[in-house]
Structure formats: C-alpha cells, structure tokens
Image (tube, rainbow, N blue to C red):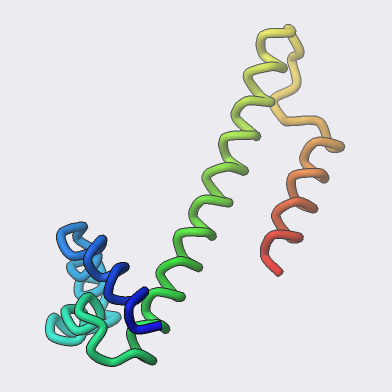
Length: 102
C-alpha cells in the first residue's frame, strides 16, 4: 500500500495539489507535503480518497451540465421554442446523477 501512495505522491508532487489543500484550509503546508511523501499512510490514504471523491463529484456535475447544454443546443437547432429541456430528459439526467451519488 505504501508503494502505491508514494507513486501517487510522485505524480502529484508538482501538480499544485498541496497548494490546493492549503488554500482550502484542509491541511497545513507541512501536512500537505507529508501527504505527497506518504509519511503517514492512513492520513495520506484519506487525503487521496477525499481528493478522488471530490474530483469524481466535479466530473459528474460537469458532465450533467454538458448534457443539458447539448440538449438545449439540439432543441435550438431543431427550432423548438422551449427554453427548457424536455421533462423526460431532465428526469433521466437526475436519475443518472442520483445513481452515481450512491
């Protein structure tokens, strides 16, 4: 396990991840640097898990917004005057997002 965390730390070393943790008041500079070096396995693993979960949530939100914008563009191109996406499509997107939140 430690090896994998060290590899992740190598990937993240110059990515700005530690700066983001410090700016978000999640960790101090020293603690964030220790995450990159994987000096404390449990804390490092937790920090990586929280980061991955946050990125996943942001990705899902961006995808949902992209789908909604694409549907609106299709409606615009087809000449529909509706300013909102069809209820069926909105319902499908909500169901997909709530399924992914579990």
